[in-house]
Structures are given as structure tokens and as C-alpha cells.
Image (cartoon, rainbow, N blue to C red):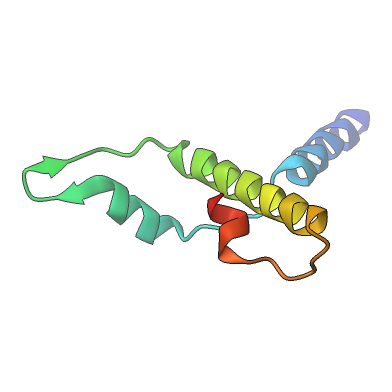
Length: 80
């Protein structure tokens, strides 16, 4: 019975560290695959990597916005 509790704690810890997905998986995979002569395969962890990039962009935009004394994130906060 003690093993079940330990396993449950591990599963809960994994869920807590996993970030919410901010990209639409099917649309992103379709865009990555391409079309016509140049088609590509997409590995299973590619969406996780793209999701991480989005989180980093959001964090940087928040920092730039705060550094400029604003509360509204503008496109140039993300693209800079």
C-alpha cells in the first residue's frame, strides 16, 4: 500500500511540473510538415519545444513591459 502512495506522489509531481500547452498541436504539426515536394516528419517532443519557446517569449514580453512601466503588452515586446 505504501508503494501506491509513492507512485501517486510521483505522478502528481510530474503533472505539477508540466506546463499547459499554449500551441494548437494539430495546426502546428501541419505547418511544420509542409506540403508538396518538401514534407517533413515531426518528432513527438517537437511540440513541447515550441511550447517552451512560447513560454519564454511571454516571460520576456512581461519583463519588457514592466521595465517600461506599462501594464499592456505590445507586439514589439514580443518581437524585440
